[in-house]
Length: 260
Ligand code: SAH
Image (cartoon, rainbow, N blue to C red; front, side):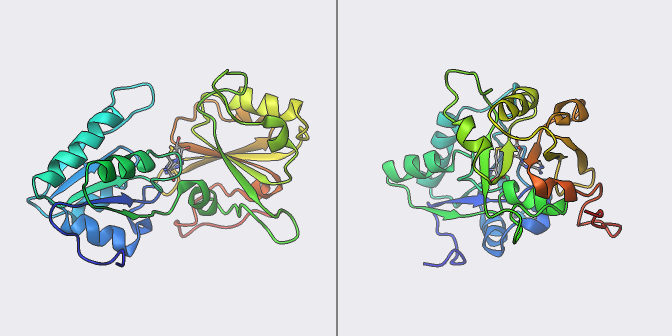
């Protein structure tokens, strides 16, 4: 089966919608949105893509706002399963890729356990695309050979934090931090304590791919202060490549790389 095969009645498609700009959804993702009888959508999904939904399709908002009102994952799973069992073509549309700090894996397993046919249509993950939209390559030949993507939703000293910050600090990779706005000061402090040079460039990119994309740059020692006033969704890039972060988006005609 190809991701492009038509959705069948009584099945679910988990669609990664990309980081917010409707142009960054895949061809298969768009086709699924067009065919859906019911769409379960959250706040990071590309809202512009909903214009492609059939006029008679049901839109269900299952947003999980940070620290705000939310629909539980169990409820989302129930909705996917019950609508599919009612014979509908169900699309779960999320921002980015559903398997990168999304709960797409749980949705996949819940559908499979319920005997509901489910397909995964991967999306363009914001962890790579948002830096790209700001002109930041997460790897660069001769400069950095890899990148590590981490979630900053719990601070480094939290007992539930499973990351090895010493290993991250000495990994020699670009660090890409998602869900890290609230804990940016604690994360950068810990990385410096574990060996990252305080002068290492960092960039915070908020609302990547949206018309109001915003970029702040500073050394890792100063990035938390520079990012005061930034609200999620935002991504922090730490590493030499962050020095190329451009104030404008690669989607705007005025985009130009800053001099290294
Ligand atoms: N599955 C998603 C990530 C979900 S976690 C993906 O692959 O992109 C949510 C985090 O993603 C946010 O806290 C933020 O760090 C990041 N994010 C998602 N969309 C973004 C955007 N348009 N601009 C900046 N960051 C974004």
